[in-house]
Length: 312
Figure 1 (cartoon, rainbow, N blue to C red):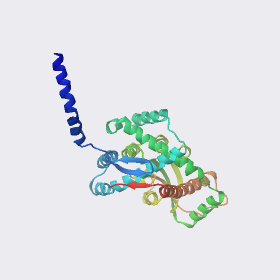
Figure 2 (tube, rainbow, N blue to C red; figure 1 turned 30 degrees about the vertical axis):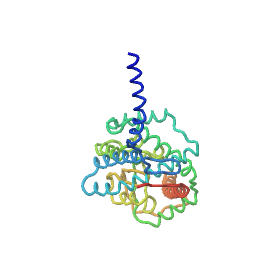
Figure 3 (tube, rainbow, N blue to C red; figure 1 turned 90 degrees about the vertical axis):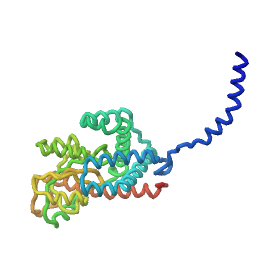
Figure 4 (tube, helix red, strand yellow; figure 1 turned 90 degrees about the horizontal axis):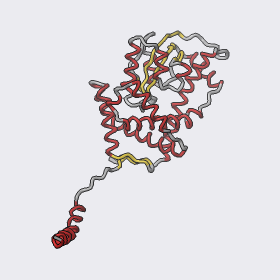
């Protein structure tokens, strides 16, 4: 019996080099890098999964020609978005910004409580990934963009005088869902459906809008004139009759619902003697425009300093 065991061991040892050689010849699958920004990278598999989810979302929310156009742009739009996410993630690390597990868990609970269907679309890990990116983005932009915008009395006066030279004004409100929010377009459509069924606009804005100023204005932006907000938003606002609610409108800030509460043929304002509500309205308008400009500059600056590689 001992002799048989010895024979078996000798045979196994003799076969071991051959087994190693065979193993070395087997192909090893490596998930190659697709997008790299400095020392951060996303693999082809990761990008493909994000793209799959994005296409699934687009197909569930669009039809016909609009669907075709969005599918044509998905690759370019997604690549730019992922590069931006990596840039902001790197910058957040430099600023020592950390997201606590508690903050992430609270956001997951809030999302699933408001929209239980999300659990069937995204895994918990995917939801957490979206949340971390969104919180990092908000905190970086709050410190690097929002906190550096200064609005002076001269700025408000200039905005007032410009408005007094323009024509029709519309009184608008909006609800914003950031595009970085999981399933953002479906969510804004769900909010729109509730508004169409009679839900109170201000309460819905307080509950759902991700505009930083919503706690103060309840989604009401006051009277606006041309040249004060981004073009897709303005084009929609000035095309609606009083009382109408728009379809979702996409800008670089996310998805908006725009509602027109009133209109007026502009009376000349006494820009040197504005009431508090009108003054705050002008301040909000100037802030929004400055924020868009500074956001472009900030992201452009990050891109110029970074080593960005997109590998086809």
